[in-house]
Image 1 (tube, rainbow, N blue to C red):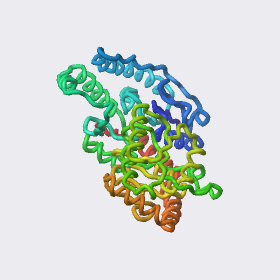
Image 2 (image 1 turned 30 degrees about the vertical axis):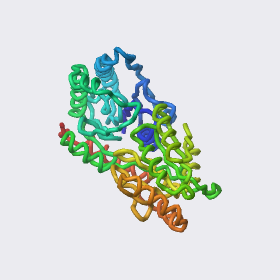
Image 3 (image 1 turned 45 degrees about the horizontal axis):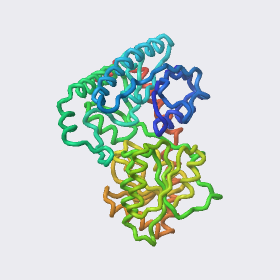
Image 4 (image 1 turned 90 degrees about the vertical axis):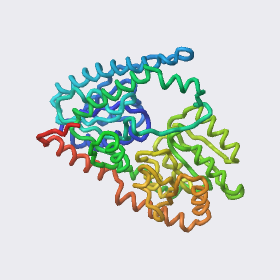
Length: 406
């Protein structure tokens, strides 16, 4: 099969998934990549596996500072026009390439790529997360606080609506031309049903079980680990607050392994750690082998992002034989087996702290959950199984005579 793979993804879970799929699919199919210069090409670099790697230049317009910040929505509106025109160029090249299928992934600016509204061959879009006005995650931070005057202006600012309406219209155009949408979790599937009334089959991620494995020569240490970009949506503030509930003489050190860092959020979380008496260390830009070592060192992986659509972190940790304590929401419920590979609790600091404390005081149970975790991953969460699912969806999509329109 000749596959045109499109993405405009930053570093993170989506790009890791693209990498794992691309290197396996490339062994059996011809793959050319179409991407924008704004994507992260170095992280989980797929270039060695594909036939051609086409990069299209795109730079978002410069955003204004105070007092002209209200014009930023107009800048973003203009960017959407540029992206639509660029998407048409990309689609023309794809249409001329005699491909059987477009396998599209997230765009930094529009979620669903705008090039899909112009392609004339079957297209599959993979939902690494749901999108649309009904999927909202709210965060409160001192550095984000807006005064009442600014909130009032936002209600009546026509430029905000101008941008949001254009984005929604462009997304709808791309969705109407996409033959199949695949969800990364049942949570994402449900959110897309609520937002757009569409049916999206679930095709789960996997884990590289050779890279993320139990390393006997790496001894367990006494800390706990959490992983992800250092941003409000990853819930590191909740983790710090929760660990602060544990008595000082039993409170573990916390390590954060972050692929990217929001500087304001880092200062906020570090100050919160001081307030709650949590010994915090932030590690950045670890490669896969270094991250696997950190999973192996940790007593537990603790994970509390806000409405995370799926989350590769729990399955990577379990593949390394490290149990997970997570918040029972989003896609985490689909990977962590409560009372077998870890513990799931509500988003309550006391409950979360109690679960962490319970496992840290029961080394036998940690070992048992660790063994269960590795076995669970090998049975249910390999990338090879994920690719087999993908190929079945691809074949059905290509053979489908009457494309589904949304």
